Image (cartoon, rainbow, N blue to C red):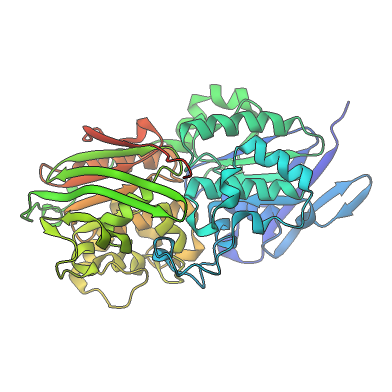
Length: 485
């Protein structure tokens, strides 16, 4: 029996030249197919799905959706969930990065359940049960972790019962248990009538068993589609997509990574207690990070990792109500937030979320010298040289004049990582730093971290993937999720 065509892109050429592929785009999804679009960062995966969603005007070609002999608008039947869609939940224009930690500033922030009121209550209850997010429904939206936000985004997109659901890197930011749950859910969802799933992935290991077709994307070219099994068996193709040329990491000027700061402890936290309303996040936590120590900070989604890091980075006002010493100086003894930040190189999913600046990527990297989200003081020529060298090491120097908002989320993550290193920080705090990166870039960044973190550099590294932890890490702190009380 011949499969019915559901959606088709035929000879599509975007009107704007910088949005075009090497050749006109042709692709179709047929009934019963579940696709994985896979390729490296910047290869064109997001561009393709945006094209499918009708976000770009076409110079040539067409995109059509067919059902029962008639046609409907693509937007009415295709839903998409990507990291950037968190913007639609959290009002980043009228809130600020540290607001999550400032109790009293969020009176207008809705509860999660308030965002899903006019829906099929029975279907909502089913999805909440499937995804195990009943507890999240009573939380204020801006208190959700990155992983929790992703779960809710997927649930919200399914409420409208789309014909096609596009999920961009759905596994990133999820702990091991949540990834297993999501994999099982994909199987369950693939068995539903009138729902087909398209996953956008940067790692072959993330391809679930329910995927029937794989579309490789390479340097803005759509390669020949394969079945899921054929792709996973084709190591030559995977090498083409994700081949890693060893970067000469050691070529970075040693003047940029000198260990010149004098301190015994990067951080000392004693009897830390953090509570919001009836939820205890951290209770009687004690932790010391000596100079030169390399730590992994681990724990399930919602266990308090981001809250703990906010205390160290100076973003959480509850630091003043707790016993915290940073770089041998007790908090609340006259130091400014900038005294703290200038010694810390920090990246997190939350920071990425709030970096909504329509400035060139070189200026984003340059803002790392001043610890600002946005560039309010111009870097000098020496700093410009340093910024360009770090961008080259991370493979994004060619983006220096491109707007930060016009590159993929994976490329944005690489630019923000360059921003971390430019000021030669004493302490690196890397919260899911490989979030959204392809496997080649993950290897590149791990090598860079290991080279940067010499004898006296301190490191706190957060991840849900054990194989992403740099080899220099030899200590770990594991947080557990507290119950409501």
